[in-house]
Every structure is written in structure tokens, then in C-alpha cells.
Length: 344
Image: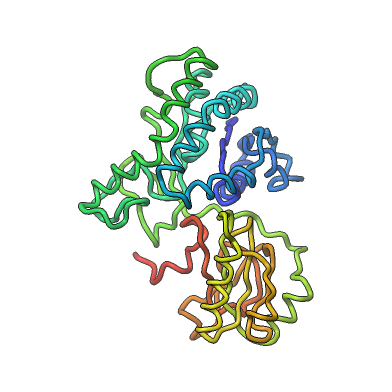
């Protein structure tokens, strides 16, 4: 089956779909990944076709985070202002890249671009989410509204918050680029996939399938830097990272994190990512070699029980089994070992 995977997101929202593409290929399918152009290295050498969407996701997220820090109103105005022209361009690119597929799939970022394309091509779109989105339930709260009760209301508000900023741009692209009107029917009668471990959460619904996390294949040749090796050899550390999170004042955020590290009396590896943390003058702030800054590492080892026994491997990055715990601001699929005792 020829499957187009649309993942128009930051790295945390693209990497799992690259992993999904690899697994689909291993099962005899013919996947192709449609994602921001700067993520082509994620499947480089895999033999899976990659179609790049124009733009720079790192710069986009920096602008978006700046708006977010000014409040939700500013963030939504920025999305509305930029999305019109951008979505028309992405729709054209996705339509070209998806020619000949039997189906399209993706999460919210992929659906914003891909639903109309699926309608135009006459193929189904199979929702594939990294969080329990568009699956109202009483057992757990809405992803973006965890304090809203009842839970079903939180799910409805979450759905509105996710889709409202894109609604006009999606309708415009659907009409102007694809020559379509009305609502999409591409997901009608289709199953939905949720890349969550069923031991953490099982999404209810006869058409909903909780598949487990989609993790990238490990690079067996990767070795930590000499600095990281030496730092972890001196004892356990806490790993702190913000992934793709950016903002207007990363120096202030870093200072807060460093002060917390010092107050807790721990050693820490700061994963700077896309600018959520920054390399300050650590000799003045880290209390004498307590902190090491790295842009990223392929994995972080996290403990199964808070550090009382030997740690088990987490699935965000690869590291030494010397990290006492990991603190990461990011998607649910990146923190399976931090969610407490498994259910079921």
C-alpha cells in the first residue's frame, strides 16, 4: 500500500512519523514522508521518499513562541496572519508529493494540510495522533484543558483550541488551491491511530487503536561527546531539556533552571534544543561543575522508579544509564517513563 505520511510540525511532531514510515516499509508498504524540508536527515539513507515542505521550522517556532509569551490572543493572531499564504503553498506542495498514494495519514499538523488533499485525490485520510486528541472520554481530561470539568467539556474545548486557528486558512486553501467546497469527508469511516502505550492510556472507541509509541531506530554508531562521558562518569545527573520550545528570553529561562539545580543540590545535563535553554557563563552559576550544556543527544536513560534501582532506558534520547531522571518540556510520546506506574 502506498501511504503518504504528512507531518508538518517541529521535530517532536515529525520524528515519530519518520519512525512510523520505517515500520510501514518493514511491513512491505511503500511510505513517503511529507514534512518540513529541514527534517530530511531523519530518514536519510532509509530508501523512503521524502518531500520537503517550504519554510524553516526552527525559525517558525521561535516566532510562534515569542507570540505565545505575549498571550494566547497574540499567538492566535500570529497563526491567523501567517497561515493563509503558507497553507496555500503547503497544500500545493502536498498535493504534488501525494500523487499516486492509496491513503494519507498524520496528526493535527498533517491534517491541516492533508485533509483537503485527500479529498482532492479521492483517498482516505487516517488520523494518527501522538496524544489523545479528538477522542472525548470521561476517564481523562482534555489535552489542553486538564483542569476543566467535566472531562468531556475539556475535550471539546481542546478540539476547538486546536482547530480554530487553522479553520479559515484551511477553507481558503481548500477553495483556492483544490477547487473544493464544504467540509472534508476524508476521515469518514476510517480508524484513528494513537501512538500511546496502552499501559499508560487506552483511548476508547471501536475505531480507535492505541498502538504504542513510535520510536526512531537507534543509531548504533553514536557515541557521547568526551565532555558528556567525563561528566556522567563523575556521578548521576538530572537531564533537563525543552526540545523545540523557544522564546524571547532563553537566558532568563536558563537562569531559573540553573537556580533550581543549585537549590536541589543535583548535577544536571541541560539539553539546549532549539533555544529553550542557552549557554550562560556557567562558571558563575553552576556551583562548580554541576552543569553541562549539550544541544541534544540521541537518548536519555531515565529510571524506572525514581532512581532507587538501576535505570531503564527512556525513549527520548540515548544517554548513559547515569541520569537520575529526565525533565522535558515536550509531547507525551517523549516521556513514557516519567508518567508513573503503568496501568493494566
